Image (cartoon, rainbow over all chains, first blue to last red; front, side):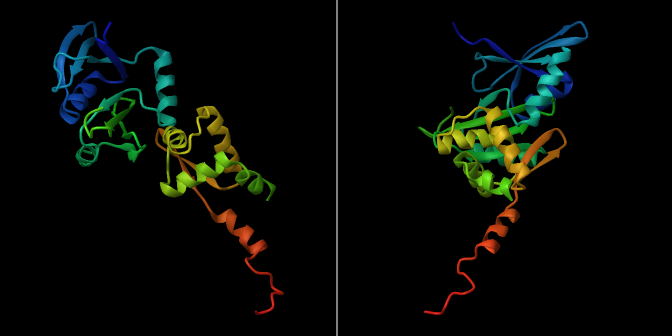
Length: 134
Length: 96
């Protein structure tokens, strides 16, 4: 068994498309119209055949309540690996991304948390064992 | 005053204050991460929330909402009353 897809629920798929590709640098894998929404997935350019991130609409009434509670407490709903978290933090902040937690060194990893502009917090993580991606 | 002494009587709450002094304005998520990774305190988020409420009622922590986020800030002012009440030396100290 392997992880094929994983999703984040977004309040606006057009904005999610823009943020996850132009700001974060992921690539669109699927973009298929489904009714008034889209089947929209992105992948990392480093692993185009790897796990897909589904940017799905948060239309379920429970989703918005859940998301608001997670954001208030600073809890991220996905985590992405980076090689140089300080550089990414600088780059994203310069691009106007709002961080709720700047890079913090936890010993085994350095993590930071930012707002995806679609109602979620996202974590990025740099593993420290070999200084590489986690 | 009782609230203040009760607030700092607990090691978890002292660790919370330590972490806020290191970086002020943290989310609950960040605080919990720091407590577990740096202090080995694996209490639930709910338990940490309750510690924060106690610290807030003692005036040592302020919770501020910024839009949709909620951050915790350190306020050391109430602690000054302790040093005023029990100064390092009593007034009657004779010079040695």
